[in-house]
Length: 623
Image (cartoon, rainbow, N blue to C red; front, side, top):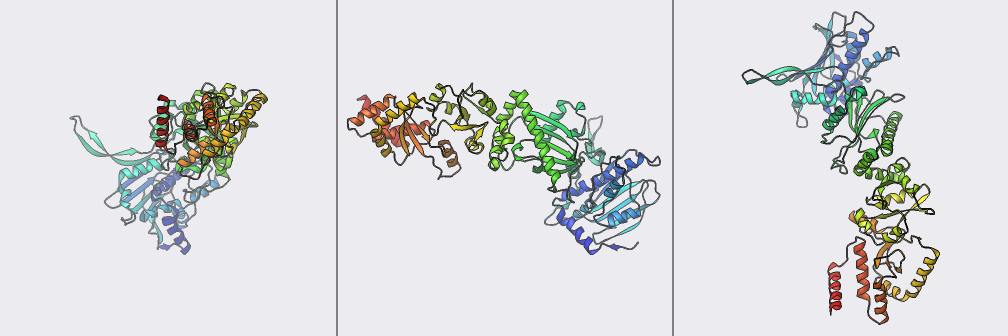
């Protein structure tokens, strides 16, 4: 038969497929193995209804001839006759698998992978010549298809058994690409493990190993070895899987030395059917918040690896989830590399998210200790999820959030907090700081606790920003005890404080003038009990937010600081007396301000000056 040239359009498409569609040349092997698996599936299906067709010892084999730069991939599947070679390989983008599947009775199930008919041509990414020797089942003649990308010819061939043998003549190395890697047995074995490990048929290779003799000596031998595991763990029946099996799979797959905190194995059937095996790690990876962390899940289609880090199928606020999703129903583009952004993907993502959320809700309700371990590791991620997108997902996540509180220093959900609020309490009180210990020691805590109110500890950098987005929970507003007026006093207490402020307005004005570049106001406060002073902010940017933003190099971020003074503290009485005696109180006012800065966890503007002033006052007291 004379050589047939591909049509101009087909040449362009072939060149595009070999050089553009597939961005990763490694996947040529995945495509050819998938086609071989399809051929075995077809033979199996036909054998169920045709007694003339046997289905014994199905397998796929890969052989490497390094010296002659040849790779062969063979199968004992259904095979192709001359017309099918012409139709399926001579006409680019015609899919025999698609036609076969379309002709099946609707009740017959066929796990056929190839649907576009272009995967075969990925072979030309690594080969400059490709030969396909095929013999169709129950036929006598075999045929050889040969192509060098310019055209093809089909001639008679010699093949004893039914099936297909593909021969790739590997390209020579270029400056840009080292094709020799595909002639390395271990490299090919690794590609099989990565992309085709769960193909249901054995994939066999001659692998170098050692044969040990009785005298203790050994020699290198080549042995035929099955290099794929064939059945993925997520495809097995749950009752046949032990906890140890899940744990081993997780630790080997994700190089984690710790067992997963939670395993989620389930199957969904419907408009988008899929099987998922998901894991919640027991601890946060050290690089979780870096660019090195691999996001998303592994995506498979009918056991064939499609994509790593498939962010499209799980929301970012669940980025801690690891595992695999295997779907029969995905609409992929022709390269199987990029997912079409259609309703199927949205439905899949929605379903996966829903399952993760329901699992976390059950853990919170029935496995509180385990959930708190999870929250210690990944609670911040849920908070960022609430905050992200201007709170678009807050309703999804808000009931999963927890905070430590002044009530026994244990975790509490917002629902639990609201359920035990004091009668007449209309606000959810919180205090932000670097740690629970530091917040507990804040001067502002005493009065609130004396009044019997529970206070949430906000120790994550996102916590206060989060309240600015979610605003309220169950109709209760969030209120920082470090900002504005808490309005905790009775009418009598308010009247008394107003009287004291009026009586002390002169000295308060003097202190405000002394500190005019540092504070926006100076006033007496009822929120202090033991301590002489504290710093609060108005109801805009808080002091803690200022610290966080400054750490992010946003130097312009500045809270409006208010110096509050305890009117009942002995230090204020002494200060008033000194002022009445005509003593300059500038240094004392500065010292009070610096004390308030220290208690708020802020840096002193001039630590050396502060130390000198304290020393001088100590000397005066000792004289």
